[in-house]
Amino acid sequence: MEKLRELARLVEGGGVAVLSGAGLSTESGIPDYRGPKSVPRTPMTYQVFTGDPAARQRYWARSHLGWRTIARAAPNDGHRAVAHLQQQGLLAGLVTQNVDGLHQAAGASDVVELHGNLDRVVCLTCGDALSREELETRLTQANPGFDAHVATVNPDGDVELPDDRVAGFHVADCQTCHGGMLKPDVVFFGETVPAERVQACFRLVESSRLLLVLGSSLTVMSGRRFVLRAAKLDIPVAIVNQGPTRGDSYAALTVDAPLGVALPELARLTGARVGAAGT
Image 1 (cartoon, rainbow, N blue to C red):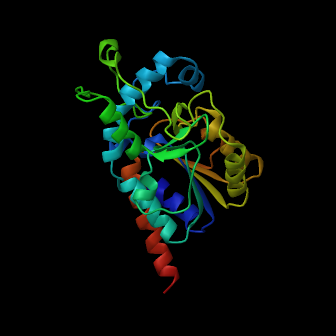
Image 2 (image 1 turned 60 degrees about the vertical axis):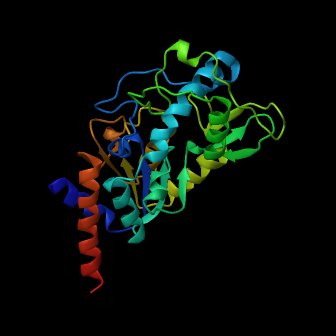
């Protein structure tokens, strides 16, 4: 509790840049790759998705089933607490590594989606975009009766399926350019985040008072680079996560706790102080 009070003192000064990761969404039923309860798994890479038709068929068959869980997921108390901090005027900006849209569903605005969002689909040939809902309708029509019991949904929104269930699944192509390859509008492993998006995140961090990392192990450079930039500029870093992260050595404060518990308490503590300061 004392660490949360210390964190509240840091946050109540405002100008906080938030970087959130998959650990924030686990309490909404969306698993992560590296959390305490995660199961080791090799994710789909951009190179395999674009270069192997069989792998692409397998991805879309699995994702067609897994998307139902992602689409039904609701924000948890941690997401709502972040939105509350933003509404209090304490956040300079919000960057998420998550692709589930739950920050926005909880009421947050102007969210930079570093890795994109699963609810959008793009054509790699012509650049046309469509909603995931529209694609799901097409996939359902193209694969009548395709269904399976889903035991576990993977972090990237697909599920495990045996090969015999994947065989015969019809993949939808782009209707605008008639045959272009469709891909979720997310950054796959092995793919590069658009440079202008990265630079916008760097500018946010550089103009902030504090970088607050929520639910990220910072294992990959995609998120850790912002911690490194903050440290280089002597901007304090605070981390709330379950378990250690690769950014702990740069942090002025670390809180090891479930985010659905810690963040509402943080919002309560900062709200009490902001309210007292305004009276």
